[in-house]
Amino acid sequence: MDNFVPSLRLLWRQLSARGRAHLVLLLAFLIVSSLAEAVSALALFSYITMVVGHDSQISGALVRFVPALESATLWDKSVYGGAVLLAVFAIKNALDVLTRFLLLRFVLKTYERVATRFFGQLLNRPLERFLTRSIQDYQHSLDIALILFRTVLTSAVMVLVDLALVVVMLVLLVAFVDPVLLLLIVGVLGVTQAVLLKGTKNLAQTLAVLREEALRSLNFIKTDGFRGAIDLRLTNNVGTVVDRYAKANSVFSLSERRVRGMEMLPRAVNEMVIAGAIVLTATYFASGGQNIQSAFPALALLGFVGLRITSILSRMTENLQRVRDGQHVRQLFEREYDLAEQDARTLAPAAAIAQSDDSPVLESSLALDAVSYRYPGTEVAAIEGVSLTVDARSFVGFCGPSGSGKTTLALIAMGLLEPTSGLVSVDGLPMAQVRDRWFRSIGYVGQSPYLSSRSLRENVAFGHAPQDVDDERVWHALELASLADVVRKMPEQLDSRMLDEGGRLSGGQRQRLCIARALYNRPSVIFFDEATSALDPLTERAITEAIHAMRDDRTIISIAHRLSTIKDCDVIHYFEAGSLVASGRFTELTRNVPAFAKLAAAGDHEVRGAA
Image (cartoon, rainbow, N blue to C red; front, side):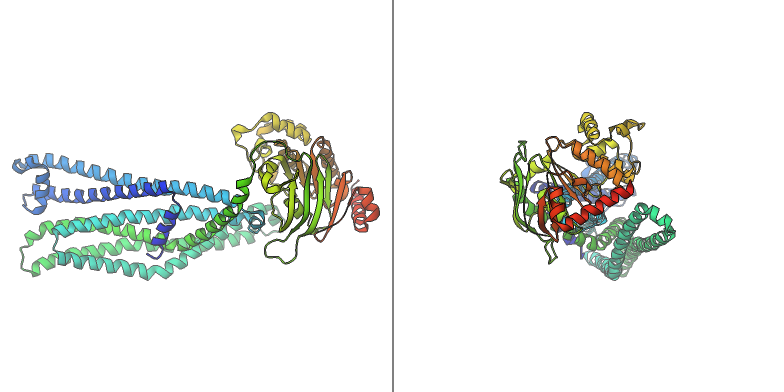
């Protein structure tokens, strides 16, 4: 029971007022279903004792329900009484199946809503927190939510169903079995269940943690193996990763086998207990000097109801073990979900004042005033006191050595990071007031942009529902990115499937595809974050020409380590160690800033070497 109540409490927390009312109605329906179970047991033994001619309190129940049976012949009692019995069992089974289905549906529908909200919260987590976790960690968090609802919470709700059935069955036995005998039997059953659960508690928790950790390791190893397949083959290390997978899989399989094995124990133990209870009942009647025939109805009822209770208790114990095994899963989910909820609350104020109209953004300038930023958990500022202005429809470059803070500053300018101090404004308005419009106005091409294993069309219109994709806009974006001719030569053109990370395309083509994605939404501002750093100089030159060709009335902000892509910028901002060192045109900075001149010379040498 250690995790049972907390699991139900967690489920209750996830429900809206309407959801809680729905759950209460389902529980009321559960009571009706449980009563139908008791009625079916009573009807069965009323029928048996009636057709064998044994007068008892039990046989009288069916006769009272159908008075015509009292004076009927044996054949009529068998046929018509049997029809009533079958009808009772049909109703009972229908109610039982419907109850379980509705409760299962309720839990999984709750999962759909919670998991969707959780996924959205993870995706919207503040960037400085989002980047502290790996993709596998986030996938694991969502897997944990699925395990929690599909296994732990579903099992907890099923325990409620079985608990209601047990209570109703015991009430039925109280009416027809000696209370002292019943108390003795229930006591033995209760002690047996408590010993069983207590005795396996520590082992079950250990196995649950081992299984969860092994599953996590398997996911990481699979990702490493599939994504690093080429490196592993070249270094002849495929076997090493396979061995690592085999070891993790062995731990997972062992813990899974033992967990499943423990789930088999309750049924075997409970059947032994109920068999002993029947023997105990017969002995109890015999020792009291009572006619053993008079004990037949009680023995029969105890046998049937006892076996039914045994089956229910076995299932309930299995579900309780699953709930208990899921304690680690529940705690992980609660921690992750609470963190995501906190992050969502911190974002709420900005969302509340955000403007949603479609009026143009960046008509005059983007301004950063004394902006500083320090990543959480670090002592050194990534950006310190930077002030600069980006005029609308200009071509601006951020450059500097690695670690100079240019990418961090670009993230702040895009509104993805909140500065520790200072102000970012667009057309004179604070970023918080125009953030939604600003996001819709900008495009972004990163250092290692993600390409999905979907169609080329879906990669260009990434994030849009397939039915909403405008092929004309896709082709226009491909034209601007100088990739349209390549796509037209593909057999399936826009329907061409991309392999993992765009494996069907060259490095330059992948980058052009990402540029087309940035252009699909017709942004007025485009950020290029070292978008050509992984390309050879000749491909870089072609991409740079494509960037220049799209200037028109757009504002372009290019973050570069190599300076060949920003030679023609209207203004270049040069950074070192998080500070803005100098600003000006390329020739001006080359003449006045030695460090900049050194970077420029290195870039020229690289281009000449490639030529």
